[in-house]
Image (spheres, rainbow over the protein chains, first blue to last red):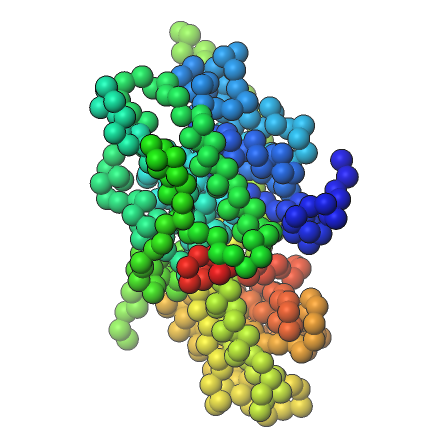
Length: 266
Length: 182
């Protein structure tokens, strides 16, 4: 496949940056699968996918690129094979995004995309991304459903980047949410019809990735937080009133701290 | 009986299993756009032909020595320079003492200076001699990284003690008021 930068709105330099870029996606579920598919189509330099889960039957209605014959197979490997022929090298990591492999993948990435439904995981990957200074594009969707009717559909795409607000500043991560097991799609059946909502959020997330890598927006700011209201059918940037400096991640406090033994007074 | 045979088979196969080599990626120094700007402001030639700065660095994680994070920077104080025939002459005793102080604060040092040209800079012969004779010996303290940074007007390269080749420096994007790239 030939690149023709004359017809790409990214231009020659933007297209070159895209082709050389490395992105890591954490989570190959409802939202992560959309992101993986779109990044595979965009033909980036390297895509690394972390997910330690196998595909469950209840996942098939929202994990794009899968069918019922794939149930029981590791999602990361499954999607890497499914989208392998689109031109993006995809490295599946069938493990949790922690430990040296995750550190190395994050440190070598231009952007990390967080598509996990666990707030604890999202908190951990944000800490790792902030440490190595790599932007994190995080997304999540939740539905308030009381068993009879939907009371709210909310989601967000948040960019956590050095010098800017973190997920705690943006109230995406709170202590109450960290105590909750997972982002809720609603009570009852685990099979939820959220594929279209996931597509909206993941589309915005991939646009954020594209903007961070290629800077195609021509000076127009990329919103740090875009919130989705599924009942109003609106995805809009959210103005942030934030402290000048993020109190949760002081920049000079980054990196691994060695605990040295106390010096004895001579 | 079955479990005994399984344990025996596991022990037997273990004898032929080679240890998996640890994944290793190229060493990279990560520095934020703002901190990089500060380092640049410290080392731009002014009254002194080759001003120097110290960049404070740490490993990203305990078991990840190939991602190095720059966390702070400071210019050399005037009394840390000495007169000599070469462009940059500094008091090695002051440098070693400062590096020792920073180890106690969990940070290693990278000695930064600038070559005034455009394009990717490389260390000169004098720089490399300094790297070998002054900076590499400091790396005996393996809990923190040690190295040197050379900036040009638009690029940067780094030396990390223990690495055979110059390492890549990644200048990382930053938030601006109202969004990113505003």
